[in-house]
Length: 186
Image 1: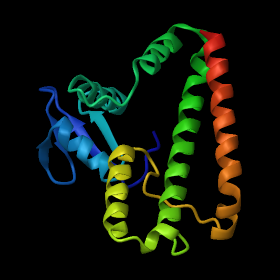
Image 2: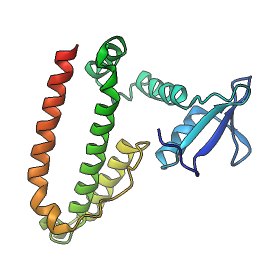
Image 3: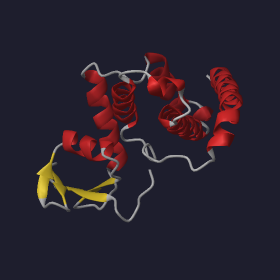
Image 4: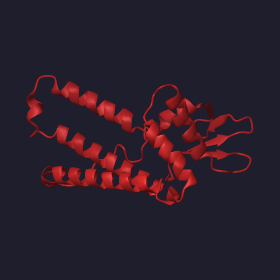
């Protein structure tokens, strides 16, 4: 996780309470998840030892969402993650996951841009604006917490329109190849 200068610093006290240094109050895991969904970088530090506990707390937030039935990660993915900790494939898994989420963010940005263009034949359909707002809210909820989720691509629209289909095919092919390689490693 990249730490930027504007990362929200949360300190964990010996009592395990979490303290927001910006607002000088105590926060919960749900509060931290909300900060992340809002696009903030968060860093959680143990006050006594100075250890960075960010990864531990992010995993705890994910585990709580999964246990409440808000499943995002399929069992097969979770199984492969557990396997990756016990095999030599461990070294490629973080890069694979980072690349996969980067492709997801790029795809989301392009999809949202394409929905917003005036050349879209659906733009004149009654209720399109409401549907587009719903789609944007859905994508924000799905992508909340992923770094760069709100960033948009700066490529020209002409290049995007002609290259979208080819790029999607390339991405699909790369994903299939990576899945095949991961399956062979386990």
